[in-house]
Length: 91
Image 1: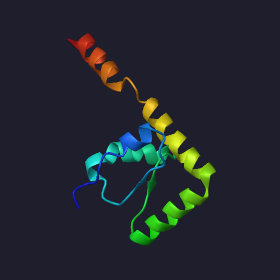
Image 2 (image 1 turned 90 degrees about the vertical axis):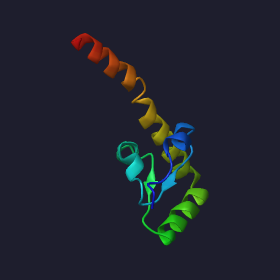
Image 3 (image 1 turned 180 degrees about the horizontal axis):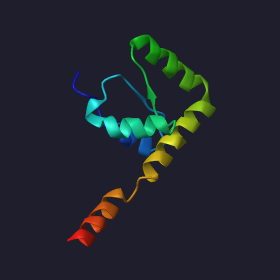
């Protein structure tokens, strides 16, 4: 396991997104998206298949998952600029 791929891209496009257990390379975004209900994390192949099939069959759930993921990312928009501005005030 190498830590997975960037789940922020599909979430940014309102795509319902499923990730596996190895997300240590993206632990903060994973946490943010899971807390917002904008990401599904599974621990095994069977769990992935169950969730994948459910998202295909339940369009409302897929849409809600996609929207929650995008909203979670947009709520953090500008965080870098705000952090830099705060640092400049300290200098």
